Image 1 (cartoon, rainbow, N blue to C red):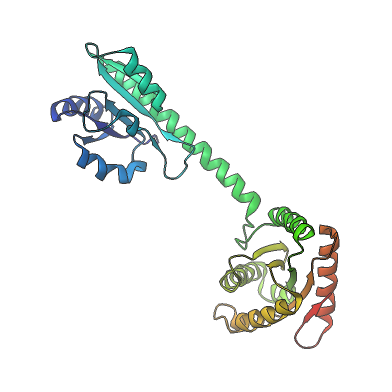
Image 2 (image 1 turned 180 degrees about the vertical axis):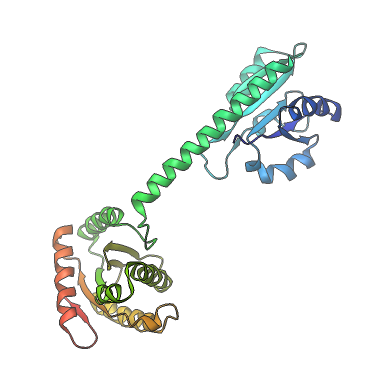
Length: 300
């Protein structure tokens, strides 16, 4: 359903009442702006409206200040239609309105059908544009966010890893990769089912996000395997951090009773590293960590 919220910037109440009476009959909801104070109040909620009608004779505001970008998406402008009387019309004013970003210009006296058609058209175009942007955002989100864990996706992590490796090869800044896994998740799924296992992975990821720094990057790599990039962190400091994180996870109320077993493989970037080599070292470190009876942390 097309949203029909119209903001009308007019010079007096009578002009607004005429437009409002006409638009109300076609299920539009209109809000009046008759002075600067009303304008400043209503513009705070500009995203409630999907079209702005502006009388070019308003004297409390410059016409260029009536063009708004959506607060939700700065690439989308809320359509602005300027209304002018035939007596006051001038090409200079018309040019100014379109240069400011106006999408249409209507001269009075206008036919009722004309203004309804124009307003309806711009509302529909704006709504479809918003829907399109939402679909694009959703597709982008699917590519960059793992839908089960809500962490960075494997695809996005590969991009970030490549960038971080290139950065390291240029600046030699300590960077560590932690490849870790819930090593008994298959046993838990076998006992309680896939739904329980996936819920546990989701809760585990939620707890992980509370424990990492803003500068670090955390991703669900595949299955119950995760990768954490620790920037500006040596292997020794990474081990200290992982021990603290492991202890905190074991105390987390949401997963405390699940008896999760976690193994951690740690490796740092090396000169002329490539992503394949880093992942192979991290997986080897994880394999060695799984063989340990206690601690289950290994540095490769």
